[in-house]
Image (cartoon, rainbow, N blue to C red; front, side):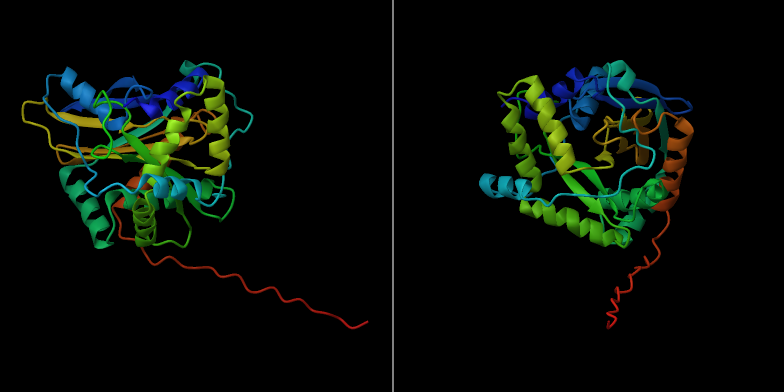
Length: 333
């Protein structure tokens, strides 16, 4: 089976967008990561990390996280196409006039990262578990509140969440794009469990599987047609950014001691990107923003620190602001 998603990323690259996945490694005792970039049209997030580990001489196999049977093709495809149009808030600072020129100019320069200690990572996982949610859902809920003041309205937000399809599909290369995706709304009055249940509901409906089969529509299409379809899809399912979690990796002791970092690409269709991965028991978070959104590292650093604080603190009850009903007074002539 061919890499369906890879063709779409290649179309983005041809348009001038950078689709490079960012990886970093920090040896113990060092303070600065060494960055490596791999093209998303050849690798997905897990596949890229597998590739780098194998290049370092580590014998690893792709993690299979899909333990449930895939939804029927026709039903999942209909569920994907039948999603309601998402009209969330937009970024206040987003430059609608920005246009890509070449991928090297589209690669984000505003980047921030953090690596939690083993004890801090355990505490974050405990907080999520106390709320009855996964780390993914916890990150989504906390990220919304970390950047809430940057949005133009109170309609909430929506995020693209890649889903690992290993176990349901098998490509020629095990490092290729084995992925589907969800578009997950997060509203101001949501509790963490609301977000988690929304994700689980979409997975039960098979929307991630439907997205995988929707990508097959570009199998014989030309680059221009794929680019037009990407723009149309972004208008229908608009997202503020991408949140991708590679999960916990248990590496052999032969691996050089240190921590890995990862971040998916940020494009003008999903201008903020957050990547998470756990190696050596430590959670690493990396955030980057697209040039159309922001090119100041200090701003991304502020967002990441707000997120880091939020994920370590149990949520308070979210006040629901209900608007008073409008009263229409009819005056007699």
